[in-house]
Image 1 (tube, rainbow, N blue to C red):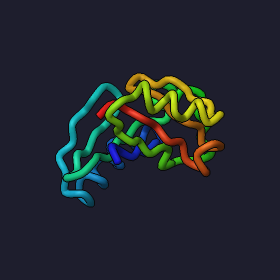
Image 2 (image 1 turned 90 degrees about the vertical axis):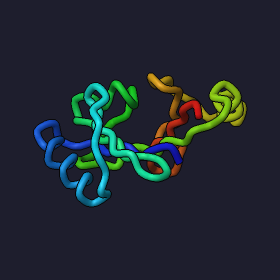
Image 3 (image 1 turned 180 degrees about the horizontal axis):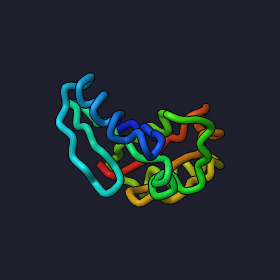
Image 4 (image 1 turned 180 degrees about the vertical axis):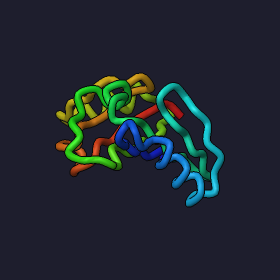
Length: 115
C-alpha cells in the first residue's frame, strides 16, 4: 500500500492535518495543496475538497470528510494499467499514474503509482 487519500472541507484542512499528525505521531510536509504524513509503510495524504480534481479527475464526493482512495505502488505502471484494461475495467489518468473508479473497485477508488 502506497497511501490513502483523505478529502476534507477546504476550511478544515489545518485541523485535520494537526489531528492526524498527533494520532500518527508523524511530521507533515506540504506538496502543493496536499498535506503528506509519512508512515513506516505508506503514508496518509490529506487534500482540500477544491483540489480533489487534481488527484482523482472526475470523482464525485458524496460527503466530507471522505477517505477517497487507496493507492498501490507497482513496479511497472504501464503493465499494471494494461492488465486492468485487458480485464475490461476503465482507467482514468492521474498526475502520478491512473485510477479505477469506486464503482469498479467495490466502493473506493483504487489508484496506482510507480514504485
